[in-house]
Amino acid sequence: MSRTLAGRIHDALPQTQCKRCGYSDCLGYAEAVAAGEADINQCPPGGAQGVERLAAITGRSIKPLDPDFGAEGPRTLAFIDEDWCIGCTLCIAACPVDAIIGSNKLMHTVLEAHCTGCELCLPVCPVDCILLENVTAQTTGWSAWSTTQAEHALNRYSQRGLRLEREVQEQEQRLLAKAELKVSDIAAHSQHSDPAILDKKRAIIEAALQRARAKRLPG
Image (cartoon, rainbow, N blue to C red; front, top):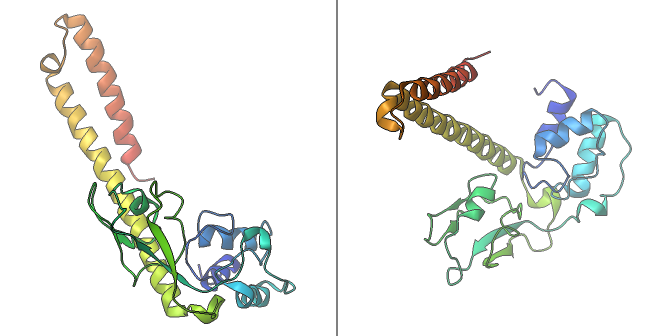
């Protein structure tokens, strides 16, 4: 991907995956810029230097960061007030880099080494127990963020995507196994005893299983 325009733009982004640019992730924004559907000044974490980077890659003119997408600021880390956390897990689901750990109804904790300061955990918290800490004082943009941190964030984001995909596949497999068990002995899993009704239910389940198996086949 790095040889394409979108790939080179993507490589130049901070990878905070904050969605402030208006796209679902940094790759989505990079592809939109490359396609001429988005401007080069929509990434607040990258700041003015980020705009310069994208201008150099795309050949577009340097311009101020668009305030509609936010303002350049210092790097922040999220932390959770333990006295107020109710263990709802909403912040865990919202974090794009799996930087929050915890279990249902148990206190959650932010892993500082992985937090990108994306702020996506803030609006989903029902008790407002997540706060942001300025960790770079007056330093902002790429001066407050490094290429190493960007690479680490992208790796975390990619690994999270693989984890979510794996969890979906595992859930589908569990449902498929459950359905196969039911169709193998339809009478034991039905309130009906009429053979005609059981045959109809069996046909419906088998058709659903066939569609599910076809969906799982590659290509």
